[in-house]
Picture 1 (cartoon, one colour):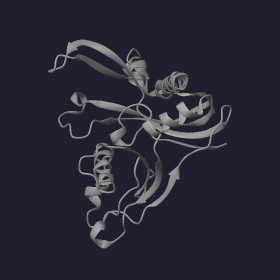
Picture 2 (tube, one colour; picture 1 turned 180 degrees about the vertical axis):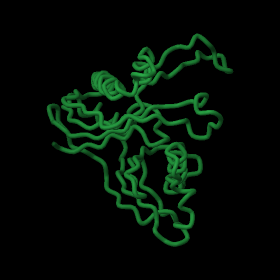
Picture 3 (spheres, one colour; picture 1 turned 30 degrees about the horizontal axis):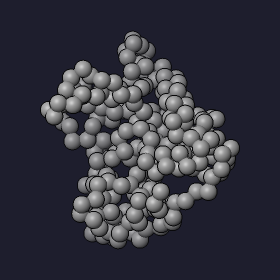
Picture 4 (cartoon, one colour; picture 1 turned 90 degrees about the horizontal axis):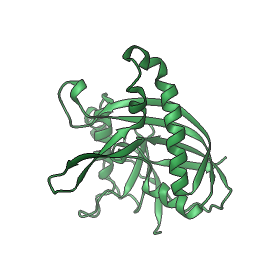
Length: 233
């Protein structure tokens, strides 16, 4: 695996940047995810042909953590980046504390075909799916319980494929966001759920686990999901 970098980026506090505050950091959560994704590209625009090769997490107050395959370049929108190499030395059996913001889904065949003739896949949000059969008046009360169960099951399956075993899983929050850039009535907008999870895990296959950390967990990675932060517990 080639080198990776973990960087802390903070929106520059110069007056010229502050004047763009509502564009760079809008109040609406879904619009903010989209704006932050575009903003972070300014720190990785050295190669015009590159696809997105970074994961990011909004740390609030204009700060971001970014895991990338190349170090960020200077950007007029950010203060100088605090960057270090990401190369954890892990062994099977190591226990780590983790923090993860994730869009947890399962993929199903819709039975349709794409315009290119390939099978069309649908991505089902696990928490939304669990709440689907619950009467609407009871969903708020059962929301976090459903999120906790879904997160535990999803992380267990992730661990079986990617070299770790969840030991403790706590869902701190579950929120639903409209897909950025899609207008119209809220009930008709495509939506995705975001789980904020903390806990501990045991490493079973260090190589497979570190590779997955660099690839990210779940979907909606463009919108700030998927980056697992780890430290020794």
